[in-house]
Length: 220
Image 1 (cartoon, rainbow, N blue to C red):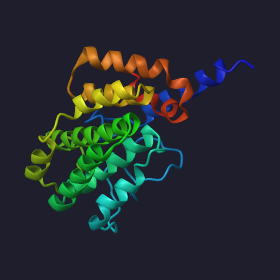
Image 2: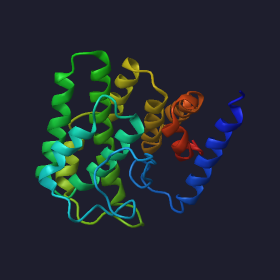
Image 3: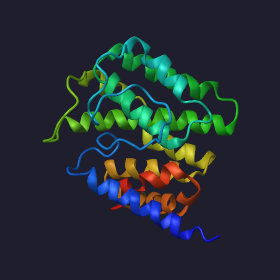
Image 4: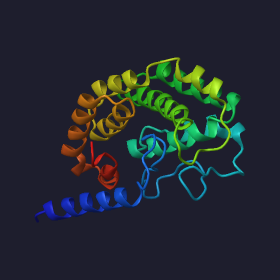
């Protein structure tokens, strides 16, 4: 059976989704939620910038860590970390605790695959925090109150983009290149953005969640 038409159809759907959901341009890791097709994530409200007001921030670290298991797809990890960054940006204690948990997972990793995911999670979280900081300078809807001092302090601890590159070296997965393309776009690193976007597209056929989200790098 020829599967090429279905692949092209999925790519077309992802492009349509991207067009429908990018009426404004904003920080790329933050403003466009990822389609996770029922994969579990943190509770959320109706829009990209509307967390669930009932969520107890004291649970953020433990619940986020529980959602980042070894079998969690990369795209689902990205959406959980996007939500976690928005929640944490308003509370220095929750932010520091979650960051410390992600750092500890790197030290505790005992296999290359586990280390790759731990590096990715910590790096992508740091990069998303940087997008929260960038958002404060955009003329567009925000996410409410943020602790900018705590955000900058935690985000400055490590180079998130470098950690994502280290993760890719250990685990060559197209969805990791997708994430790296978005990070490179946030930093306006054109060569890296184009390279990672190309590698994400080339390998997307084996990852249904990546296919559904390819539209986010349609112009990269």
